[in-house]
Structure formats: C-alpha cells, structure tokens
Image (tube, rainbow, N blue to C red; front, side, top):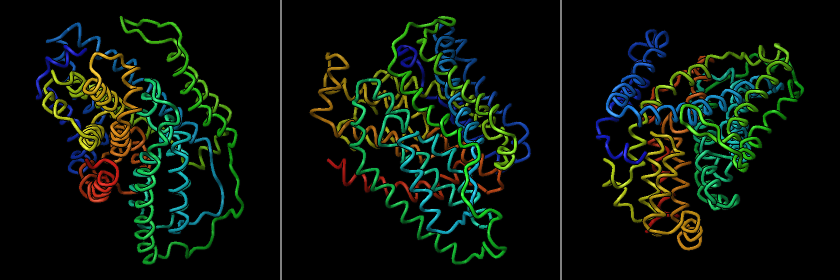
Length: 449
C-alpha cells in the first residue's frame, strides 16, 4: 500500500480536483445538465482516476480500488441509507414555530445528541422537524448552514460514537471516555456558533412575518412511527459491537474483511427493511420522503471515493510520498491541528486522522509498538492527540464533503426548495468567514506553542 502511494506523482490528484470543481460549478452554470447527468459526471471522474492506475499498477491498483469499494464505500452507503430510511419513518407532529429561540434550541439539542447517536443519526432525525418549524420563514439557508456546522460535525466530538475518526481511534486503543478531553474546545465552538446563530436569526426574524396564517393544524405533540427510535438507537450499538468483536475474516477477490463487518452491514440493512415495512406509508408521506437525497449522495460519493484514492495514498505514504515535505515538518500540536483539519475538510477525515496519528507516534516513539506508543502519547503528549482529534472533527464542517451527513443535509434542503450555496459558495460565504476565525481562537486557547 505505502509503495503504491510512494509511486504516485502529485498531479495524480487532478481527477479529484475535477470532481470537486464539477460539484461546485455545474449546478451554477448548467443546473439542468447537472441534474440530468450528475451520475455520468461522477462515473467519468471515477474512470479517469481508475483506468490510468489500473494500466500503470494493475495488481496494486485493482486491490486498492476493490478495497475502497468493499471496505469503505459500500459500508458508507449502507450506514447513511439505513439512517436516512429510519429517520424518514419518524414523524414528529406538533405546533412548532421557527422562532430564533426554538431554532437555537433544536440546534443545541442536535449538537448534544450528535455525540450519543453520531453526527449522521442526529442530522437525519432533526433536519425535518427544523424544516417544518420554519416552513413559513422566507430565509432559511442560514438554518441549514449552522445545522451542518453544529449537528453534522462539531457536536460529534465527545464520544467515539460521534464521528468516524474518533471511533477508529477507539479501535486503535484510545480509551472510550478519553474523547471527553474535547469538551472545552467543543463548548467554545458550539457556544460561539449558537450565539451568532441566535443573533442573526433574530435579525432575520424581526424582518419577517412568518405566522400570519395562524397556527399549525395540530396543537398536540405526537411522534408517529415512534418505534423507529428503537431502530435508530440500535445503529450506534451495532457499530460499537462490531468494533469490539474479533471474528475470522472472509476474503473476496483477495480482500480480507472481518466477518463482524459483514454481519454489521447485514444487520443495518435488516433494520432498515424492518423500519420501512413496519411503518405505514402515511408517515413517509407526511415527511415528504423520497429516495433522491440518498441516491444523489451515493452516486456522487462513488466518484469522490474513487477519485480520492491517489490523494489518500500519497498522504498514507508519509514522508516517502509526494507530500512528504508536509508530514516531515509537523512538530507542534497547532501544526497537527491545522494539517489534520485542512486535509480532513477535503479528504476522508477517518484515514486522515489515522495517517496523522501514525505519523505522530512514529515521530515521538520510533521502533516502539503501536499500542505502547499510543499509551505513552496519551500519558506524555496528550495535546497532540487532542489537536489531531479536534482537527479531524471540527474541520469536517468546512466543506460539503468534509463529513458524511453534510452533503445529504444539503440535498434534503434543496429538495424542499431551499436555495443552498455551491461548493465554493459554501466555503467563501459561510464556512471560511465563520469557522476559520473560530478555529484560530481554538488554536490560541488550546494548541498555541
């Protein structure tokens, strides 16, 4: 694997850049073309990446691409699809009004729940109630932006169930409750963002008259399809259990995958089917449930996962890869914070976390076993792991592809008719102006050397 990454030139990441530019520009300059052909465009960039790799490195490239599909992409789609289906079978009924206070309360609740049920789980459960509460509001884009910031990313900081990088750290030997060390950076981030949101939403609310037509038809609180909450809570438990079991591996075309991961995917598919079959169609109709958002995510992330292969493997090659100059010069917690974060914003934050953690362990404890080196890192240089963890989780909010639920939440919002900024519009208008100053503050308080 590392030899493959060492052999790749830096220009092999160009298809990935092309994929990102397509996601950003086509919806703006050719929206109809994009809506009809985004699947073909995703496939095009996947093939532009895969075909040269298969020609130049037939055996290694085939193995790595198959590994990406079987071990990363398919489980990714199964998890997102399961959570999306289950959440679509839960309808929260009541007289909700999208006031600044109630909107802030929903965002704060979602931020807290994200560490318990995962950022994806909390996102798919709360996005529909938030949208219904603000049905009569004219300006809603900011609701989705702050929802992505808080519920889909920063809220998942406090447990290994909250975000995939932290779960991988737990599997590597990081104690389950160690992630509570992220509490104060998380509270600073979420507190500042909630305050900004409340003030901005209050300003917009004062200019609108969203409730002139009276109250909602139903004045009582009720959860239809409530039993799906049991299915929803079982998802993180299944993931946690699969991470602790140690069963034999099952090989597929030379790719060894532990049996517990196959069982995990089967269990997730099963509860998604049970949720769908046991829930009346009326509940999904009330939620205006369609499969388009998860279909769009699955299709676009196929192209992203494949076109991202060269970039990730160059990164995983460490000092021997085309980005070796970057890895070699990481010396301080703040350098690890920004490097992990910026790479996580555009690449998969889980392998980025593992790569930077491995680099850190190798730098401080060469020729020491990984488990022992990790124990020593926790005891002697815990601020480095804190920096890597915060970077991987917080910076996921910087782009639509920084974390799994971001793009799906955007797709759900657009399906409801809410105009959302493009890929670079999100970056330049919202995430960079709001998040980068906040991350500079986090750096100053927690990682400044």
